[in-house]
Image 1: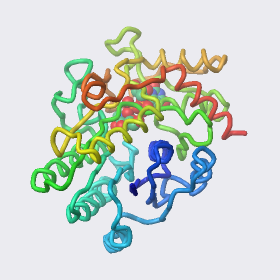
Image 2: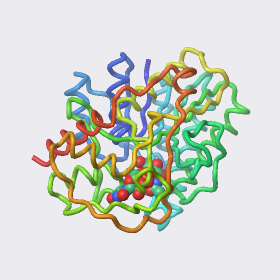
Image 3: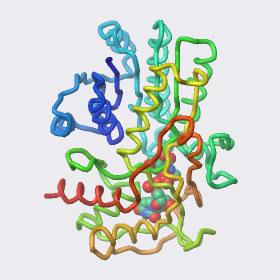
Length: 338
Ligand code: UD1
């Protein structure tokens, strides 16, 4: 069964390609390599023994997208990762984000809508909840006004898919709302490859640990949390990748309750920034150089998932602990800096 993975050379995409191939799916990757490299294919081959099909293609090119779907008319499912994801950049360049994240989504949905049956998994984010009023966050929590164009593209993306599904019974879709993905494949053949200075906490920690950065800034210790630092739900990337395969199978096997569904993908446990630092120190045996600074604009106090729906309806549960995920992130960082 042929599955298209857009953005399949990226962080979450590459881990999902591995899980798909491990389960016997035939994978075709589209990636424009704007934030990834073809070398990731070597890692995928090292783990799975199989080279997925790959086409370097810019999804903003409508004609090329049409040609691609004509050529590969046997694609039965699409997992759509390809998108820009830097929150700060999205504030500076909103149209780039709307074109990259919304324009391309529309093109793909147009193609899928013409098929007799299609299955579509969308990369959404817990960012759609903003600062939720109740913890843990269930899928029924209200979607709040987005803080950034990036966040808005995830909200709008979900609405576009939902509206399209309402009038397209042949289209079946699941939006997965990820909490904070982290870690690397246990083989350390693939992992996160941030370009420039990492904005996310875990790669900044591991780069500081390995000596690439002098010091981690902890953004705020005056939040109303147990130790004053902000709380997030850190989900291991391989657990997250597996959620995609389970969601896809749910659609392929017609087990979905409606043709548009939404699931949180998190561990259900909140960890503060200081707890994440402690986890790093524990698994690496190193002291991390960090300093408490002011809060970062746009950050929320706390976000962690209620995973009841993902556990009971999707049949997925995270397996790795924060320490295990951190160990993989640290092993990966050490490997790539050698
Ligand atoms: C961010 C994005 C979110 C996106 C997610 C993807 C924002 C506002 N949100 O979430 O939309 O889906 O990444 O992973 O950017 N921190 C530090 N020092 C650092 C970096 C981070 O203290 O150098 C803190 C942050 O203040 C936050 C926590 O670590 O409390 C996690 O930050 P980060 O990894 O950037 O993720 P989010 O902000 O939760």
